[in-house]
Image 1 (cartoon, rainbow, N blue to C red):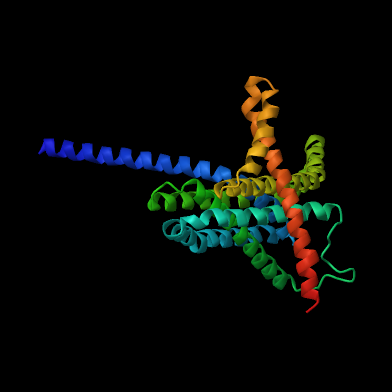
Image 2: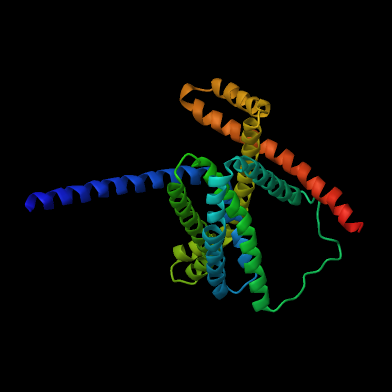
Length: 316
C-alpha cells in the first residue's frame, strides 16, 4: 500500500514538473513573441491617453477601464479564435497579413510626421467641432478607442502568431492568452498612471512643504513633455516595426534584395565599431533603416489615400 502511495506521489510530482516546464515554455515564448510586437504596444500606449482628453478627472479612470475591457474582448473573443483558425487552416496567409499590417503601421507613422509639418491636412478650413452631450461624447470616444484597439490588437496577435508558428495549437492558444492579458494590463495600467500624474502633481503642490510643492509643480509642468516624448517614441516604433515587417515579408516571397541592402549597411557600420558594440550597433542601424523605409512607404500610401482616393471620393 505504501509502495503504491509513493508511486502515486512520484507520478503526481512528475506531472507537476512537466506542467511547470510547460508554463515556463509558455511564459518564455510569450515574452519573445510579445517583444516582437513592442512597436505596436508602444504606439497603443502613446495613442490611448488622448481618449480621456477634455473629460473631468473623475471620468478618466472609468473611461480607461471601459477601453481596457473592450481591448480584452477584442483579443480573446474575436482575434484569438481567428488567429488559431488561421494558424491551423491557412498559415500561408500569415505573412501577407503581417505585410498588410506593416503597411498600415507605416501609413500611421507617416501621417503623424506629416501632421507635425502641417502637410496633408484632411480637415477643411471651415470645419468646427460639434458640441455633444458629455455622456454621448464618452460613449463615442470609448467606441472609437475600442475600434482603434482592434486594429492594433490584430497586428499584435499576427506578429505574435508568426513567432510561435512552430508550437502546437494548445500552446499557441496559451501563449496568445498570456500575451493578450499582459499587454492589455501593461498598456492601460501605464496609461492610467500617465493620465493621473498631473492630478498627483496638483495634489502635491497643495501639500505643506516647499520641496513637495516644487516637485508637484514640476510634475505638472513635465507632463506635456512626457506625452510628446511618448508620442515620438510611438511614431518611431511604428515606422520601425512596419518597415521590418515589409522587409521580412518581401524576403519570404523571394524579394530579399531590400532586406539584404539594409542589413549590409548595418553590418558595415557595426564592423567599424568596437567588437563589444557590434551586435547593438547592427541592431540599431537595421532598425533605423527599417524606420526610414517605413516612413517612405507610409508617405506614398498617405499620398495615395488623400490625393488619389480622396479626390475620387469627392468627385462622386
